Length: 277
Image (tube, rainbow, N blue to C red):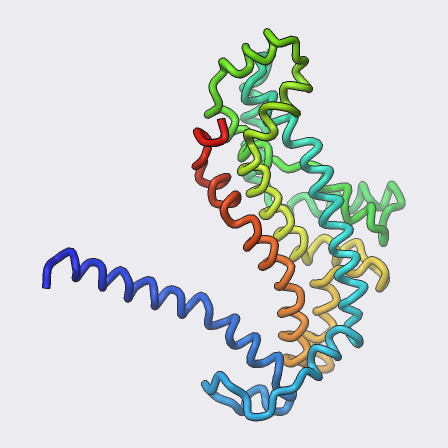
């Protein structure tokens, strides 16, 4: 057996082990979601339950109010993404292609803000939202995330690979900066924008801390908060309904990633820039 074949087999085995470890929690989640509560810990390592049921999904949807929570989560997440795209794309274009005083210090400030975790800004943001009387509203869930330093950085890094000659050609054709951004550079940056959109949707769809501080009623409850009622230390943890709800909540993220997979990879790696030019 040649060294090349041994390397290929070793790589395949390693990838198989990694794939098994990655998929194992999802298999356990799916299995637990279709068994009665009293049998959750009786199946051992058997992946196929003897008496599957969809009762857990019914309880998660009805008792947990997951339907209305997913509508709220979709509205909040889509609103955040729209506001972020309206702010990060112009900012990324300016940092990548425009010359203005203070550009480098401002971009360094954007990079420095990436070092600040959301937990650090949670209290100041809450004080501001409470002062604006936006607690327990969907607007209060959206406003603190109207822009994204990561989005500015990601799209800017993609745009700097585009030749500056395109800027000169656009200006010679009489396009304003805003039209050049919308008609030329935004389409070129579609992979980076798609990658950021997937990232933003995933982060805010699964966000738990900020909705926990702001949402006070079922009308403003997001999917993670809806699932939390099945994870109570006082009344016990309902693993069947919890995993059923987690399965439902995971599906939108999985579908969006599958549809945007190619653009996501291109945007995160910078690949495909030449083809988009």
